[in-house]
Image (cartoon, rainbow, N blue to C red):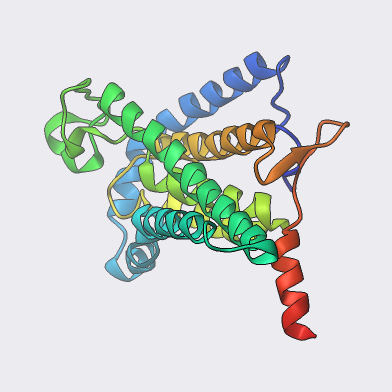
Length: 245
């Protein structure tokens, strides 16, 4: 299992990043060799086989994560002005948590959207007309915004964001995130290479945001051994203690 307290996943570090990059490119190259067969095969599955993937795929939409977290962040920050003591502390902690969810999911998603337009790869829906490796860089619409997969980025980034805060639930959210990413192939919206790239962007983007927050001392702290951990929600804990008393 991934050690969420390390600064970067999968052995990535300042010294190993060239090997990490080569490994990612090698996986992309391997997936590219089966892109067409995997995509056309999955799209051709019987409808009962594909139905569960259509059910889960919209979990990867970012609106249901970004809008509530943004609204909560704003409302909690505003609420801090009249509040005092432990109530102000708890509101500040929850506002910072909301900000982390918003930036941790929205940041990788924004990067993916920029890459989509820059790369301009055609989606599987355009296979008959354009093939699997047709590109319209920069000036394109959704039909040429296949690489990377935005749903994959969002679902996986959210899994890591939640995992950084509550590590115990990380395996569940990671399984859901990967399932959403995989669903993008049988629903006919992405190729396997798009999905893999989206997973990588979502994962590394979430780590980058977490590390930035730790650098600023927001929500996380870096220990002397380099590990990064969430700060305790002291204000929230004190409120719960009061409620139980």
